[in-house]
Image (cartoon, rainbow, N blue to C red; front, side, top):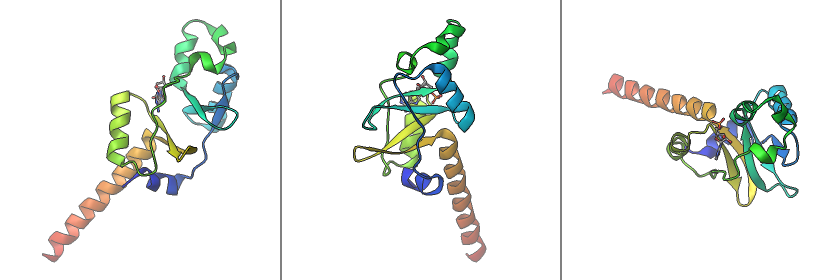
Length: 142
Ligand code: AMP
């Protein structure tokens, strides 16, 4: 199973935000869309960073005034990305090692989706269920 399978069921839409937007605007966007991270993109749609709810919480420790800061000040610029061909195993490994829950997907040079740890767990559970059903069928017909 690969990332392409996740995108086939959830779609390729990615919620993005520009560098100069404020943390307050980012927080509103996360709340309205009920998501945990925004990909920060440039004028040509290129990936410049990622801002998650954790970055906003961390910024707020310095004071509520941080909500007026630009997204660029608190995002992670060194974004780990994957490809549609990336295996589910590799994706989960990236998330575990990097300690993050969101991975943008690149197709060629273009942003082609975003997978969350919830998407990965959902697919893994379906995979495990299919494996155990195949095992039960095999035992029943042996
Ligand atoms: P998350 O677990 O996704 O809420 O993110 C936790 C921290 O990791 C935050 O500081 C994010 O900016 C950062 N982060 C999230 N996703 C990625 C990613 N794909 N690559 C690098 N850093 C990330």
